[in-house]
Image (cartoon, rainbow, N blue to C red; front, side, top):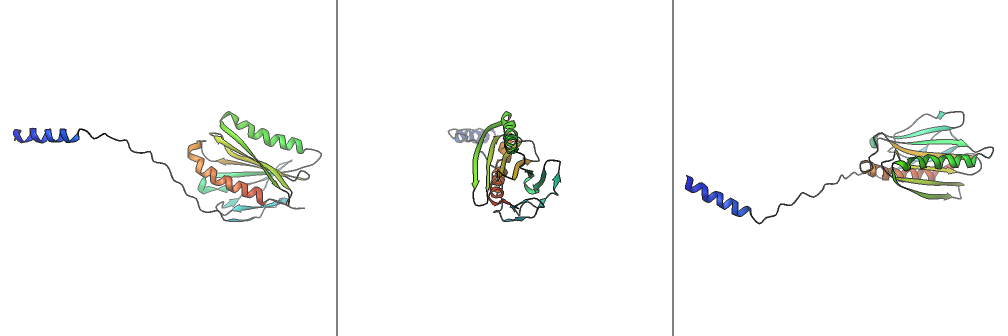
Length: 190
């Protein structure tokens, strides 16, 4: 029996030499979201817009002394787009713009980058800015639109999780498209 074991062990040792062990390739999470289907959102505010049907609810209007707002909730993505409407009056447009820009700049502590994209729809008198925030910031996208005379709408995207850019990136990219569509579909009510 001993005579048989030694040649078999020698055979295994010789056959294992020469082959390099290779590490397994990294696996990447692949998330696929449905194609967006947009419908007109019915809100009792002085503007209308289209929302993705994946967002299954819009909250009741929240009112304060100076603003009104609605939340567009995406339970499947664990995210919400918060919209805040303020009336432009008594020359307060500069302060509204400054407040919206300052809110975005507060994310520079955790953000790797902040890029801004100018938005303009002359036909519907909608002008604004979309901020895309990269990194582990609390909000991945913020925007504002205005007609510069009477209406001002700002929005922010937040996830119901600790910000981890690598984990939320696919959902953040999907929702950026929805935010762009909201901006493109805003129509002011007179």
